[in-house]
Amino acid sequence: MTLRDLIDKLLGRQPASADTAKQRLRLVLAHDRSDLNPELLEQMRREILEVVNRYVEIDLEEGDVSLATEDRVTALVANLPIRRARMPQPGQSVAATAPEEGSEGVATLG
Amino acid sequence: MTAQSSRYILICSGKGGVGKTTLTANLGIALARLGARTAVLDADFGLRNLDLLLGLENRIVYTAQEVLAGSCRLEQALVKHKQEPNLALLPAGNPRMLEWLKPEDMRQIAAMVGEQFDYVLIDAPAGIEGGFRNAMAAATEAIVVTTPEVSAVRDADRVIGLLNSEGVKPIQLVLNRVRPKMMASQEMLAVDDVTDILALPLLGLVVEDEQVIVSTNRGEPLTLGDGGSPAARAYTNVARRLCGEDVPLIDPSKERQGLRARIGRLMQTKIF
Image (cartoon, rainbow over all chains, first blue to last red; front, side, top):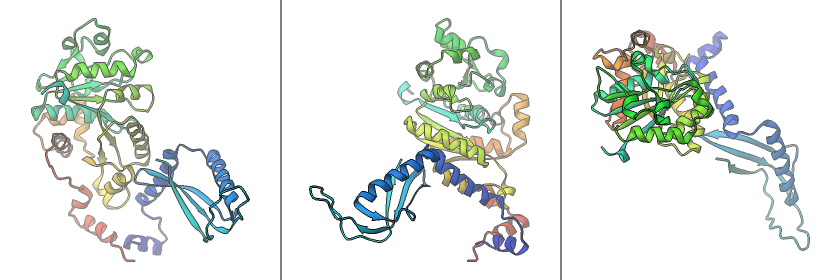
C-alpha cells in the first residue's frame, strides 16, 4: 500500500484510476490471449476433473481450474485437493503414490 | 547496402488513431536525415493518409496498384521527398484493390522496394483483418504503437499475438501520447505498466505534443525541422535507436521537478 492509497482510504476517495486500469487489463488479456470462451473452459474443467477422478478421489466441489497470465504466457492452473488414491483395478497400471492434500498442477498453453 | 540487409519494418497498432501514420512519416524523415535510404509504404489501402502527412498528396501519379499490374516501373510510382531526397513514398492504390490483394502481392512489392532502400517502413491499417495481414506478410520486424489507454493496450496485445504467430521479430514498442502530469498523479497507466503487460522492449516514448497537429496541418513532419519540440526529439531518438545507437530512454513522469511532481512521487512511497 502506498501513501496515496492510505490517504484515499481515509478520505473515502476512489483509488487512482491507473491501478484500476491495470487490473482490468490483466483480467481481460488473460481471456483474450487464451482464445477460450467460458463455455469451452467449463467443459475442459469438467473433463480434466473426470480424468483425474479416475485415478484419485478428489473433492469435486473444491476443484479449481482457471487461467492466469504472466509475461505473455497464459497458464492453465489446476488446484485439485486429493482425498485419497483409488485402488488400482487388476490389469490397469495406475501408479498412484501416497495421496497429497492440495496438489497443484500447472500446464502452459502458450 | 544490398537487398539482403534491408530492413522491412511494420508499423502497427490494432486500434486506429493512436499515431501509426504520424510515426511512420516522422520516422521515415528522421531515418533519411540520418543518411539511410528509406522508403515508406502506405499499406492502408482503405484509408490512406501517409501521403497527406508527408505533404506529398499532390505529387502522386502512380501507386502500388500500377506497379503490381506491371503498367509502370517502380521508379515512376515512388514519390521522392523534395527536402529529404533519401526518403520516398510508395502510395497506396485504389481501395478496390483490397478485394484481390494477397499477402504475396505485398511481399512482392516490399521486395522490389527493398532492392533500392535500406529501410522499408510499412504503415499498416488499423484492425486485424485482411488488410493488416497483407501488410504483415511483407515485414520481417515490427514496431507496435500504443497509447497508455486500456483499449489501445488491449488492441496492441491482439496484434502482438498475431505477429508472434507469424514469426515477425523483433517486435518493439513505441508508447505515444504520454501525459507526464497524469502519469505522475497515477491517473494514467505508467510506462512500466504498459511494457510489463505487453512484455515488449521499449523503443520510444512520445509525449503528447500540440506541435504534432500543427505539423500535420502543414504536411511537414516534425522531424524535418531542427526544432526542439518534445515529440520531434522523441521521433528522432526512435530512429537513432533503430539504427543501433544507444540513446537513453527517459520516463518523463519520473523526471518532472515541480512541487506537484515531488508530492506525486512522495505519494507513491510504499508504507506497508
